[in-house]
Image: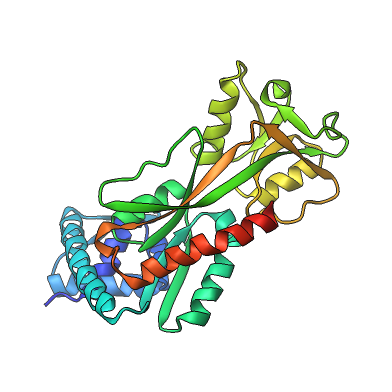
Length: 304
């Protein structure tokens, strides 16, 4: 009989692409994942992973087995959801994916509150890009995701995934204190056509929003620097190297060299909780979503 834990390891490698990424998602070491797959290879008498450069790739047989594993894991989840729903209390492991600034600014409060009130719930957090996290929920790798979209670019939600709005996160233009606009209360987008921008790399939600919005005003933004972390962007602004559009959530206290300006109209990120429809009855999910929504007003008041 095939071991479910080993199938879960293979499925994680198929979803994440590498043994290391699969290990991070599962909360294991890469060595432990490799051992699980090696045992599965002996169990099935089939080669499942092959060397490809510095990494590995799944064989055709492995991909077929990973697809079967996904269906089996969905059945196991259905059974677990039914049991937990009958008990009526949040319990078991809950795998949560969350984008970086919410993982820093929102999730510590939420996770601490859940741990205090529901000791039988083992909530585990992983930082994940918003668009990736939605797909990971749909495929059963994550139980719940906290993601975001922008007011002009809605987050695509696949069939079989449900969502609930958590709240709106405002954004500010950050400029160096010596910048000519630093004394203003607000600024219009048309006034920023000659600025050097600091933003996230292409393909991220924030970068794509910035490019679409500023192009709509009739000019091509000059991207001087790219940095994934908001704190890095703030540091570059503080050094006088450009301006940045940075959300308030998780931003923390700004250094004295940086001044926030209101951009008219104010850009807004919408925060969402997402989960699979098949797990909607699970108390761990309903209670976590409720806690996210209840915690948001206090967090937004502090960040704002």
